[in-house]
Length: 415
Image (cartoon, rainbow, N blue to C red; front, top):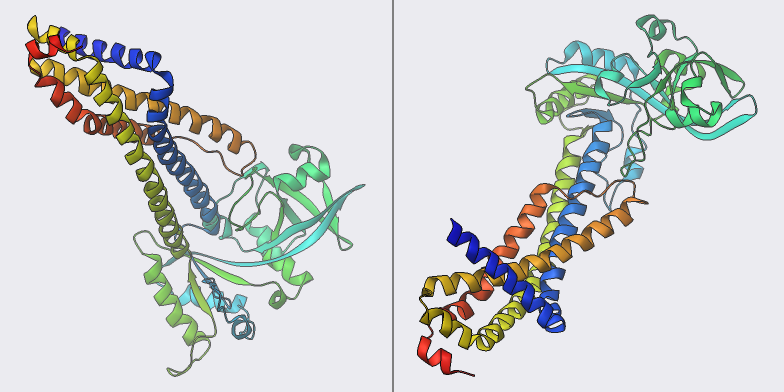
């Protein structure tokens, strides 16, 4: 054990000595390693953080849910919007029928939305999302009420003019979010009593449901004020535990065709949109980006590996007489081999540490204005240093082998 630690310490000192003695040469040689590790950590950390943020945003749609809508959410450059706009809107009666017929659904909600300007005394906030919902909406969606309460069963039944407002709405209208409960806000000459304030959600990359700038009312109340057909009504359905969204999607398609009395030859005039497909699309996109990042990093690492190998060849030549002296006084060939391999690995690790520091500085800078924080996971750091060690061993194996095989007498005579 002591011998191993001695070899490690000597190798580390020689690596630092090489760095101090030939600063410019070593820096230029390690630059490729630094850039390679910078690319690997930078790309993986950014993608990992972005992917985590997008998955969180997607959860606002409801995990594993199916949205029955007249619109198809797949999009694309050839999206036939003219075809979908002619489809009939979802009806509350259709949701009630689906609820009776479905054997795979657990929670189901009817949802409508529009935008309005809300005011309180002299304060006004424009572009607030007004959501009309049914009782099970909260079971499907991901949000919590921070102050006050959510709608009760009787609130939904009676369609009372109560509202649950977003965190930003409360701050803009009342100054502080916790001051909104129990006060009245107005819109279009109508009044809403605020019974709750939603916890702050933060900015979203994917425009799902912006709860911070929203006001929720019951479906019955909203239907008494607006024509539901003009509010993009959607039926949200969540499957029972153990049921896949794809299986639910197939069942709902059959039920909706039955409701709308479509013959086998008629195409659907609705779409059962599977939210899970968005997550699959996100993962495929990030997979492609990761491959691009690895390709760039790989080229840099190859260049860096040649640079480190060049340093080690020069180092072996400069220390030939020292190598001969060590072998003459009893140093084994394996000891010489390990010392140079470890020195090569330490040089690569130094380059990796510099790359890691650069990524850390960049992550701090980007996190200050991006809608998500860039974090460097321990697994990514471990992967980066593992690559450094492997690259160092590969780069130094030939020079180290040459040093280990030297004849001590000939090596000592070398000047």
